[in-house]
Length: 141
Image (cartoon, rainbow, N blue to C red; front, side):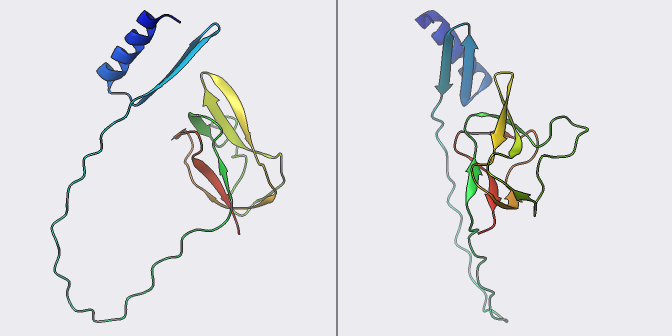
């Protein structure tokens, strides 16, 4: 892929305000990612009122192993919109069972369980864009 084509893709990213762009044609493939500055706004301090009742403890951080996305793409929970999802919360799965599909560059890639367990939570919605390494499904601990 020539540098002119890459510069055109960079211009397209800036024009459309894209953070990530993947492009592939024949034997050429490029994945571009922009660093986007995040602006934080400091919140004004809030005066605390005396508590009338004891405060409940903060919720525990979720435990249990997770399945992560092996690529950037769109997550689909079912083979088609009219079919039931591959897995549901509370379902027991075995290593190798299909958990969903990740579409990347018009290719449907199966997301398979790497371990056996019971699904505790599905962390993404159907048709959500997922990033490489993003947790998709959490198993019960």
